[in-house]
Length: 355
Ligand code: NAD
Ligand code: IPM
Ligand code: MN
Image (cartoon, rainbow, N blue to C red; front, side, top):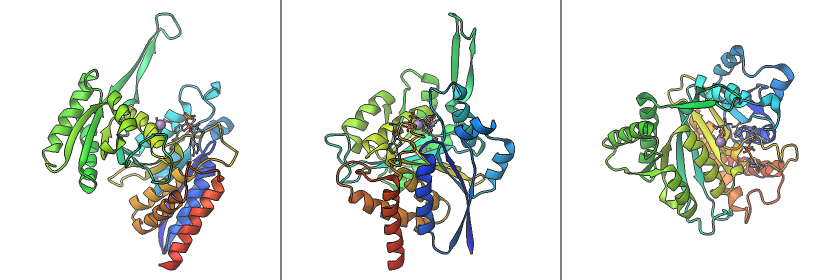
């Protein structure tokens, strides 16, 4: 039987709670494929217990898988032992950089019955293509005279023509398969070097896609449109930091951060791609069984679609769609994490039996 070798990093806080449901959904959805799951204990709790953030040997073992499902990593922001982005930089970003996850795909779609915080949301269906391996995230910075009144703290945003072009090409190709509208979001009126490079590359690649309507927004103005008229967006392409910020906002307006899925893609397939909710470990609600597992379950659907199992991905997506359609009002509408998971798994199993 065909195998899908899945590495699972459940992580911290609500990470294990939501990945449990995502894994159940995958097992229910796959047909004629053996899901071989390997759990990797990594994250803030693992680091505090063992001192390991992410060893080279662990990275090497992760690389042997077809795909990675990640819940969330990171502890209490007030915990001094975790200061300095030890987990965020040392684990999450290390994975994205080591496995060359240069496309960070973050779709948003609001269901008609799911309540948005927007008074008049209109039709919300767009995808943010966030660059994943460059920008201010590369860790090219440092500080001088640290801790003195004369401290100088620098973070340098790194943008290469190679790195920008490959993510822009991905975004145009995606736009071709969607509504053929692409918006570059940057801050080229201030960040003139990086912004200039992004705009020139978008202009150049646009000539190869004459049927895609292209526009540009400064990131500050983009936040206005995301709230006032999100229907204006189809595909947004943007840098690593702007994409991080915009996609929490996108999650909020699109029916709740608990429904926002993402894929860190290595499109060449040289390394495993990694799928995770947009949200974090949510220490404020962890351990209470109330986290919405939808984002993790939809991330599992993305994982299956990008790992050569589109039918199984579609089964999950249809089941989530039906569950969301049944949610009149708020996000998880008072159900527990496992109740939402049960409802979705039941729908998947029923659809498989009927097929
Ligand atoms: P967060 O996303 O964890 O939480 C923000 C808010 O959203 C909280 O009120 C939380 O309760 C709510 N929320 C998040 N997921 C939810 C869900 N599934 N259902 C219902 N409500 C949900 O962001 P934060 O508080 O800024 O970060 C907490 C920790 O997570 C930090 O250590 C941070 O570095 C880390 N983090 C990790 C990832 C990741 O692993 N991919 C992503 C973001 C943040
Ligand atoms: C996300 C998170 C991460 C990011 C952090 C935890 C490093 O916020 O996946 O959106 O900034 O990319
Ligand atoms: Mn984020």
